[in-house]
Amino acid sequence: MLKGFEEDFNWFGKLACWHCVVPEAVRLRDHIKKLEEAIRSNEEEMKSPKPSRIAKEMYEYYRRPDVVRMDKMKYVKLRLYEKLGLAEGKSCDVKNKYKCPYGEQANELVENGRVAEFIWSMVEWYDEHWNLSESFKPFEDEMKWYHFGEPSIIDVTSYENIIKAVEDGRLEKIIEERKK
Image (cartoon, rainbow, N blue to C red; front, top):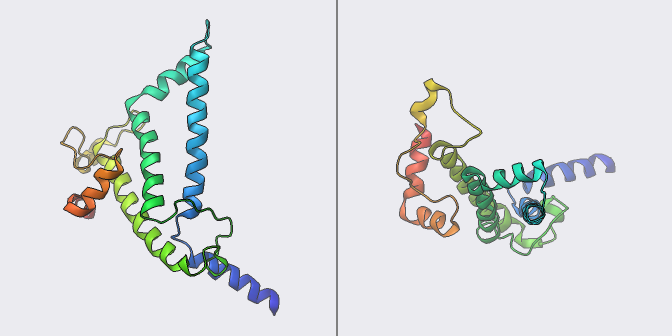
């Protein structure tokens, strides 16, 4: 009987904190740290008299416009999750609302996390449909849903611009376009 309660408690506790972005913020912090170290290491190797072929390829890769944009977006996502999702300075390996290390703030973390996740999902959708990538090309019959070459609505590499887009209604335009 007690085992069943514990399983339910853990299962429903994990479901209840589903939208908390603290664990994702922790993952992003770690990922960004590794990315910065990889880029720094690559730059150091490129300064050597004879950098390897792989170092040269990675050097070029890190400088591709779509890769630079994607890397900058990671910083923006982290900032959005830290500021709007309230994950700044927090970490969690519990992933259970009922055991949340932040106690009564758990509800606020879930609600704010839900908003931050939604905004970020719209930013990612927008980026995919407005900004051309070297690694993805939609099928010809789907091109009507893409807006490559059209004027930008938001700058996906700027936290301030995304927050301003929420406030001034530009994000609403993106949401309407997605509904189509």
